[in-house]
Image (cartoon, rainbow, N blue to C red; front, side):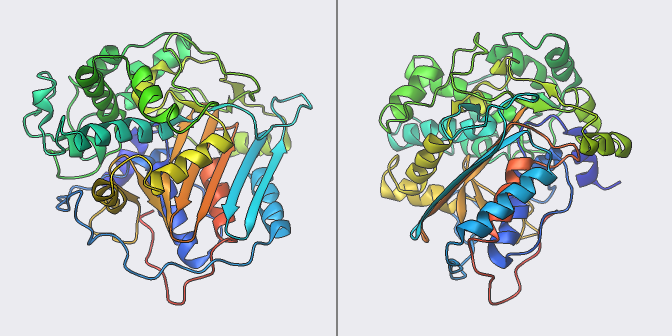
Amino acid sequence: MTTANRARRRLRRSFTAVCLAAALLAVSACTGSGPPQPGSTSSATSTSTAPATATATDTTATSTAAAPALLPLDKAQLQKTFEDTAKELLVPGAVVLLRTPEGGFTSTYGVSNLGGNAPVSLDDHIRIGSITKTWTGTVILQLVQEGRLKLSDPVAIYRADVPNGANITIEQLLTMRSGLYNYSESYELNLALDTTPQRVWTPEELLAIALPLPVYFAPGQGFHYSNTNTVLLGLIAEKLEGKPLARIIQDRILGPLGLSQTSFPPSDSNVLPSPHPQGYMYMTNVLTIASSQLPADLIARAKAGTLAPNDYTNSNPSWAWAAGQGISTAGDLATWAEAITGGKLLRPELQKVWLDSPRPVDPNDAGGALYGLALAKFGQLYGHTGELPGFNSFMGSDPVNKVTLVVWTNLAPSADGRDPAAVIARALIGGIYAPAASPSPGSSE
């Protein structure tokens, strides 16, 4: 078994498939190719042992090819693609919101709760998982802009207990290149999520799991998606600002942008604002450590409708904290994605650094997944994916073609281990962008 495969086997409980989504969607955006092969949410943690030599200001890793042209907006075909893909993935409900220069397309599929008949709605609130990382990352970049810290600062300035913290930079935390162990991979956390789903976690408890465990590699010598990085960034922001992260996010992001349906909720609350769907997952958290994909016989039962997923709606998300505790709606996510690419949060110089930062997760695969300063790139779209048990989301914005796409589902992962919102997004992107004139680079997966 290769190192990458071993990493995938270890990491089934990472709650986002951002890098898998990036790898899949990048191919689609360039070629309009067919649907992705079944995969698992664990591929979010693709690792590389080769040195990551690019810096946040290095633009050589980004594509210099002309942006692909847009296809005419075919709402009927997009509707069919959306419904067919959602049905294939067995999601109870799904929402899509698309904005293009030719107009918009919105649609809903399915129901808010299994056994019920209430449809999902564009107004529904969902748990957005790792999209929250873009909030935390933005706060850190704003603090950089204000001269209160530097991307090159060692973490040891702010936390003396981080292993090799004198050699881990703020930039490496943002870009997932610190090598620090991802606490959400641990058996300890996953067992607790199954046995005490209402437990309120503190950031220090999460770090107490992660920091004693072996690092994946020396700082800057690879990529490994780790929620530990973002928890540290949240604590650093609190230290510099002297107030809770929820207040920082509200003051710096949600309030100024008018995101009234979006929140970083109190850690002791598991409440979703109304309206909201129920969120479902087929497996327990512990079982996902081995694989996010059900055995073949259970997949068959799920397809036949004789195996129902479990309801995870009321599980407390505090274990995700700065890395994934947020709540939002499709409309607010679209506004947020456009704020990221539209330069509403940073001055032009740092904005350019931010958008130039996504680079290959694997330096030997320039056509694979791209990740930067708490920001992924999916073909032409900048954004992020998010996953918590029961909810999966995708948001992306293309500043060149003025395209914004948001998809969410109330199932995560699918019975066959795929990341449903990312798969639906990829299928839709194939109907938004014209195929590239020349063959596209391969995917890292």
